Length: 633
Image 1: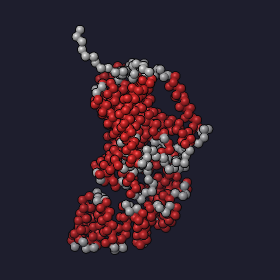
Image 2: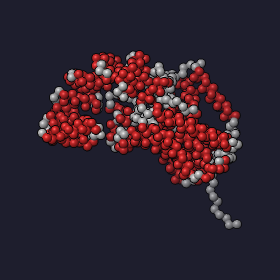
Image 3: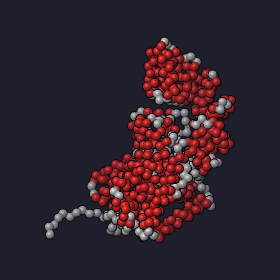
Image 4: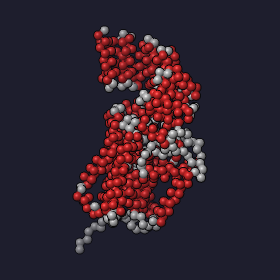
């Protein structure tokens, strides 16, 4: 026999996830893989279709609508040298969010703004496309991990429809987790291909994808834990533990290097690696640790029974070992640990990998002092974990199929229908701010902040009386919150209660003299009353403390124009337009001030620019009439 070159092998082999395979469902063999993927994608798009009509909600109003940095392509590059919320330091808000380093997320927002402006369906469509892309990638990953097309198809369908993803998809600013998954999933897949097939290109691709994933969000830093679990479960030989860990450690070196480089870059930009929320900074460490079992079990509950989900769940830190919210979760976790220990030798490698894929991405969010106590459970953090969970569910259902194929098929249909229906209903919760905060109030009726946010949502709808009622409830629960009084004043102003609005704005400023938004709103009230001198004083005060405030500068310019100081108004409008060249309202008012000064040519130029960019029909009609009048003079 002719001798040939020995083929290189390794200590890994692909084992089927089940003794039974596609043969348990003969009809599956008649469906091509492309059709399976089509069905998965079609079902995913179908259940998330009603998210496309959703509005900007929650942080969207600040991160997208109120973010002037998105107007420039340069923001995509600036994102690598600044934190996600850097733009907010140029606004009137004193409620500055934590410093996150997620440059690819910021680049994604910038791209979407350039594509869609503030057209909400476009933003929602992009979020859905990202989820669909991740879903397809999950199919190929699980097919590779399981060696079973049916397991991959069922798990991926469950993943595509799972309601816990609504927060990441229907909420536009919740996209960092799916964006990270867009790289996390291929990174895991390509690593497995590298170890099973060889080829440095797969390792390179995996490491690069890992780096891109953590530039979307920090969670993919847990990927090496999943890779180590896969390595340990795929060994056919049993080397000494120290030797096995050494071998696996060598494989993790590229990921460790990339992770360390990311942390160094993060530290250089943010000045820190971690962040503690000011509200929870005073919470004892013991209380935070005692709350971890409750949070972890709650996440498992939301994966298993994802119904009636919310942005807020009325959570708080646990301070007593006799609290049922401590005892019950500890009991559940202890029971699960005992069960896993008893059946440790009967669980397949795929099950162990699925468990690690589920648990590892939850670990970073168990650092509870990063969060406000009302937000220690957030369903968007389940996006990566749900991949492993859906894998486990599919394995469980297909084990049933080994003896009862019809039962397994019926169970699969029931699970998918329940998940799909729940997702459709959950999309409605995130459809608009009122629906979102009504659900939150349902879970946390004694929280002043939920009533406050619901009141602000009603303000956005100009339902001033309903807003006033919610804001009064927020004031009852928390009398000394300046921002509650500030927004209560806006509701009163909308109801023509100028005296009440003025009183509450002054009360807000007495509580928090540095609340620039209240100064700006008080100036607006004074302007509407015709007290231009008083309004000028308020706007000037805001600009003295915050020279970058576009809102205050526009209001000051408008006030100066009302005082017939058009030269001063032009100066302020020009400064504003230098910073925001596409501000149509400023261009319009600048044109009018130019006309009042007799600068006809400049007036025509600015009004023409405004007309070219304006998308507000009523304002465009008014602007066109003014332009025609000026041209006719």
